Each structure stands twice: as C-alpha cells, then as structure tokens.
Image (cartoon, rainbow over all chains, first blue to last red; front, side, top):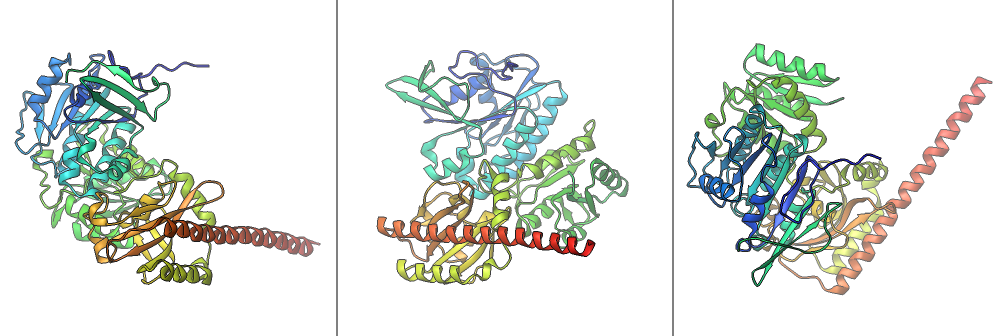
Length: 219
Length: 310
C-alpha cells in the first residue's frame, strides 16, 4: 500500500494537506477573517511554488502587502496578481495586471491564463491560485458567464496540478446560486466567527479533521 | 482527442498549417480550417466542431467575435485563443461574457500544450455555463438507454402532461430529458418547445437535486434572474421533479411552469412527485421492452444465420 503525501499543505491551519489539482471554495462572512484565512491557504510552502491572486475586492498592491504581512514570501517571478477592481492599474514591477472591471470575465480569464503560464515558465512547478472574492463577479456579471468563468478557472487549475482557493461571502449571493457554484469545487472550507472566536470546517474532502476546528485569525 | 472535430482559424497560412498538423497528428482528430471570421462562421454552422482554436487578429474581426458567434449558436463549445497577441492588446469590450481559454503561441512547446488543452477542455467540459453533476459521464451513459426512437411520440406523456397542466392550473407541463448540450422535450402541454440549449434550462439545475426544485419567481432567484430566454418563454414560476432511474442516474425532469410568479402547495408538490414517478416508470418500461426486443431480434437473426448456414 502506498501512502501518497499531499502536495499542498497549510501550516498553522486546521486543514489537512490536499492533492494537486484540488479546488477549494472558502465561505464565510467578509468581516469574519475570511480574507486572512484565504491568504494563509495561499502561503507558498517552498520557493518552487508560485502564487497567483485574482483580486476583485481589494487592489493588487494591498493584496500583496497583506500577504507579506502574514508571512507570504514575495518573489515577483513566481507571485503575481490579476487585479479586477475598477481602480486597478498595471504595475510591472510588482507583477500586477489590471483588467479594470469585475464584470469583464473574458479579460480576467485571459490575464489569468497568461500569468499562470508565465509563473510556470519562471520555474514555479506548482501554483496556488486565490480568488478574493467571487462575490463581485456574481454581482456584476451575468450568472451564465460566472459559471463559465468558474469552470474555466477550476479546470485550468485541475489540469495544471495547481491549487485553487476561491473565497465567497455567502451574504452576497443567494443559497441556490452558492450551492450551484460550489458544484465546480472539490471541497468547501467554511469559516464561522462567534464572539471573536473563529472556527473552520472542511467538507467534501477525505482525510480532513471532522467538525468545527478552532482557528486563530485576527478579526 | 480521438474522434474530435476541431476548427482551427488563423489568417497566417504557415502558422495555421503547423497548428492543424499538430492537432491532426495528436490523434485521429478531424481538423477544419478557416482564415477569416466569415469562413469560421460557416465552418461552425456546417461542421459542428467540438472545439474552436482561433488567432485573435482576423482580417474581418477577432477571435473574440468568433467566440461570441459560438456562444450564440453552440454555447457549450470550448474556444481557445491561440495567439501572438499580448493580453494587453486584446479588446474585450462587448465580449466580457464569452469567456475563452488563452494560450500564447510564443511559449516553448506551445503546440504540444495546445493539443493537451484541447483534449482537456472538451473532456472536462470546462466552458459550460451551468453546474455539472459530479457523475455527468455516467448520467449521460444512462440517458442513452432511455433515449429510444419514437419516445417523443408516446401518447402516454401527452396525456400525463395535459392532465398535470389542468390539475395544477399552470401554463405548461412537460417531460424533459437533459442530454449533453440540450434539453429535449418528450411531451410539452401548453407550449411547442422541442429543444432548449442546456444553459437556458432550469432542469439542468433540477437534476442536481434529490427532490423537487421550486422557483416561485425566476426574477428573485440569482440563477435565473438575468435570463432573457426564460422571459421569452414566459417562465416566471417553476416546479420540477428529477427523473431518477432505478440505478440512481438522473436523466431529466418532470416539470410545470407558469407565466406569473406563484407558489405551490405541499399537496400540489406531492401530486407532481407522483406523476413524475409515473413518467419515470413509463420510461423504465419502455427501456425494458426495448431491451427485450433487441435481445429477441438478436436471437432471431442468429437463428436465421444458423438455418442459412445449414
């Protein structure tokens, strides 16, 4: 019997490592630590890993600063951002590529694929992709295009042996739409916050801690 | 990539031939070719490709214009921009919703990557605009067993849907089979729908459910609120029961729709479930009958062969 080691691990979080090609949907309230949780799931565990952010709620520079503050190693050959905010601007030095609107899912998809290829070409054997968050896409783009975009993104991550971590605030989307979007993911990481205490629960993946697990997040 | 038809569009003859060669060599794919948007549109209409690979710059438009045509005529078909154009040069205005794959031609081993990408986007159906059941391949295989000639002419379904429509006092009642890209209506009382693109159907969401899916007002449901097609069809309220085979595959749905928002009582939904069970039983009986007739036909032909050989 062979024991396969998980490819992507998450230090300091109560989430067991996952195989390459896994896509996770992270759900939780916007003010309850979901941003920190998402960024920590994206921390590179080796220099040979890359990280690609697709940001729609905060701009590229702020995302990189927050990531670094949480211990993320910044190496602009292997870390980059597709900035989907309306205020986003291209910043070659920090590997930030602006699209200009969270409704332009075609443009976001093209920038994502292009950046993914470049990180690979720069030696990133595996890439963690984080989307923070899907909510603006759901709000500003037609629903059918959102499904198409989510399938394209998760499909690319799956076949490239990457890791996908996409956050969404359930308060911004109805339950039915959320459950339909969740269909494209291998598992879900739920975050809850009660009286300043945060806990996470992983669903849909095997070999994970059962039930709610306390997690130390700054909320 | 075995058996796929791929449309390759590139205005540069040399580039196009190299891409066609790479795609054709990978397996026994049929590769259609075009050098303009117009030629590509004709090829999409006549050749029904499984995947489209296009350069961005075309003499009479762009690869994204072609993607827009595709989304209109065959929306599930994946489209890959295989291009020399840098992302910054690609204009996405008026094309924000088409969503395509992008692969730069100048990367090392680009055509090998393209061949892999074509295989992946087709096999994994990565550009569909609706949620996919986790067991989609098995579901489609099961559907084939129930997709029998003459089924759409079965009077039983016409009677059932007519009764359902009057009993629940709704505009439309129908039996729909959800196949790979379309929903086909075996019977439809109150409307003359024959097929609908899967991305425009509500049943493609119903087949993900264990029980009846009710939408009292499509305009209040995020999955359907921006669907012009549902408005065109006069669908504001919907209740659909998944049609599940004895082996657990969901092949379609038994549904009612109404032109005004409305609710459905528990007793109406209970009746709808019963009628859906009846429809599924009819489908199952026809499948078994067909299986038996095929087996008997096989025996007869073996017997005939045997007597001829004697």
